[in-house]
Amino acid sequence: MAQQEACVNACMSHTCVLLVALVGFEAKAERRLALLLDDCSALGARWRVVREGAADLWIVDGASAHSAGRGLIHSGSVRFRPAEMPHPVAFAEPLHESISTGHRFDPESIHSLNVLLTQLARWLMPKLVQQALVAQLVANGASFTRSNVIEVQHHGRVLAVLDFEGDTAVGADVTPADLRRAHWALRERGKVLVPPGFRITTTEHVLWQFAMRCDAVDLLPQRYTRLPIYLRRTPAIAPRELADRQLRIVREIAYGPRTLAELGEFTGASPQALARDLGALYLIGAITCDPGRSRAVRERRSGADVRAQEDLSMFGARPKTIGDLTAPGLVPSTQRAAARMSTH
Image (cartoon, rainbow, N blue to C red):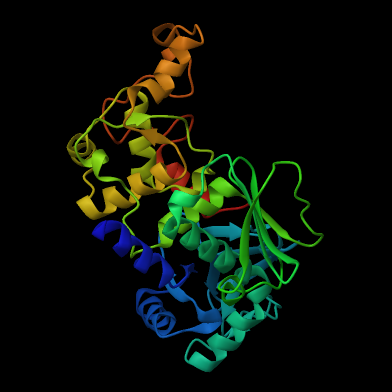
């Protein structure tokens, strides 16, 4: 009971986190900007610099970047088109003369950074609302199941809709503060209409992003620390959202159950990092400690010959070393890392 209360308190005091990738900066300038982001409180969020996985915002060193025409930007070995990126792209001044953008700021000024991030609120605020929604769900986990569709409203106005087998939709102008006084109601699937203009994201993606950003909550139940862990299903998460270590975990348990200690030895991850990764996989329903709910058992029940299909499945043959392919159907990690940072 004490552990559940601690989880609730942590969730309710959860400060939403936004992840920032710094592109093209020299080490000294990168450290300086990272410290500036640490002190930043724009949008009521905490800003964290990341080097791996998907980011909510790219900040590019404007001095080292230049335009190659047709919307293509070069920054060192990274090439991308800001208009085609799944997140906003901003530039630190000074800018190369070939780049023209309103998303720019003075990297020496916290005020300039705050102004920029406030300007990007229409892209970033829905992500904060999504995190706040999941924080409340985790805090009241006993009240919800994956078969639910939840409508969040205030005075008859719909703020958000969460379908655990589909999408999460949030109003474009909704803030996390709006949720604190909202009414949550269970609805029948197919009976909820999402208003026009809502920002829609798969619920699995929303849950994953929360797990990757929430520092205060241990999402992994205690039984996972002592029982073998099985793959329940492959995560429906884009590869760019997953770190190499997470991909190795999924690949390893695809071949059979592994204990927490075995996964720690295989990945070389710290206990804290491993618990976070497994907590995220648990939250999206990708792992289980019940062998009867595992992927392999479901395939056997459906009449599939797992052994006969293994080499032809998306998992292929088990790698001999962790330097081999790190996940189903993906290129080696060095090539994949480069692909994450380049959009042609």
